[in-house]
Image (spheres, rainbow, N blue to C red):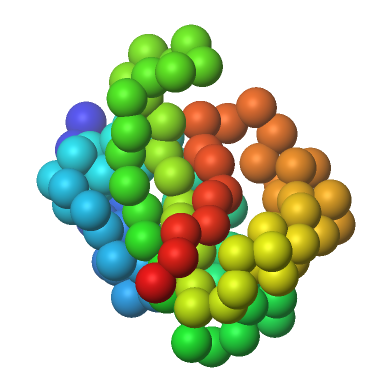
Length: 117
């Protein structure tokens, strides 16, 4: 059985991620996403929510970090890099968590985090 169409589809989805997100350790992030394709669909929804809460100046960064919560291969962090004052940024992140992220992410090895520019 030829697996090329599946690989091509997954590669196309990963290409869609690379536009809104900066990838730290791109090879490791892409390998992780290829093994967890359900995360790609969720990640594609993130930019809309971030722009709405943090504005179009916020940057998005994907980073694979070591396991701290029992995930075998580590966890992926979608980081919102913002110039907002910390208290305001954390308030916006908590609002996003309550209104969308916690339900959307469920128990997947994907975290949403704030970093400051």
